[in-house]
Length: 210
Image (cartoon, helix red, strand yellow):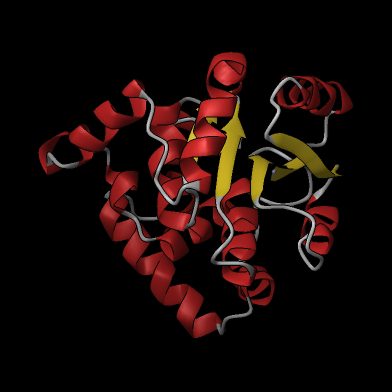
């Protein structure tokens, strides 16, 4: 029996996902979580074999939560479920530790197969995501932010959210000097010269919608 942890802050979504899984004889909902801390607490027990994770739960950037869960339980497959386009976020989620990525509109058709795929230690790639991977293999077609490391991307998101370098250092558990280094690399890769320009870049590329 495949035990699934559903982590999503919307009760209606959790109920819908539960109904999909209850139709499968080899799957059951082992636990539910309505927020980031509840999700992390559930993982302290032996409640699941796979996590279905909403990328947009309040209180934390989705990729940050994904990375934390993966660091705490690296052997546990995580399937990201999101309203955001695959071409914008799927590759970054895979790099942060996700085993697969599904758009919420496709959950009814793809969820069960994707869960079986990631539980069998394979990555789940939709056709759209496979095309994104091919695009990533052609550097000349990549957007500048796709070349950022995970840390550089996290710094960009926090700067665009109005935080100072000192606040970012505290949140990420890093020194101010280290965060400043990530900031400098990020600005250079994006081809911008200031926090304001970096924020404008993030807004123009819709990177703050997570």
